[in-house]
Image 1: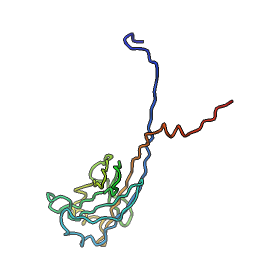
Image 2: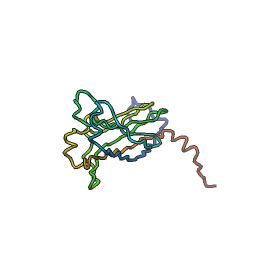
Image 3: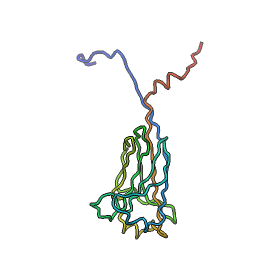
Image 4: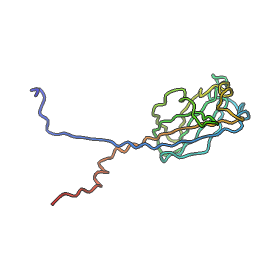
Length: 173
């Protein structure tokens, strides 16, 4: 033992329990050609869905989100609709093939956990797909396409002591 190091008199241990809730939402765009031309920064919203006890929706920007992209891209964002609390989540947004049901390659960039701030926060892809690439793809059929969002909500239960305090342990006599 190092003489400069005092002897250890106690040891402590802590832990946390992380719970993940996951879900998937599919947003079908019917009449793609009619959705184009609504303007950069304008969006169409999916129905609200619930994952991990939080409410969400998808925002589809047929002419893109940013003017710098000159309307060449479709943008897609996920929105946390909750007004009460922040929520940490990971998500993946892809296109679905209407014939096989197979999903496109992963979204343009790797998505790290994001903290969606209350009240209402969005996160997503400014350049989800070029319009000309979507229009030439197998994902667009009969003027329709489907966006799939896989979502994982991270719930951290750090108060393990309370959980353990409520657990009874029978000791032998």
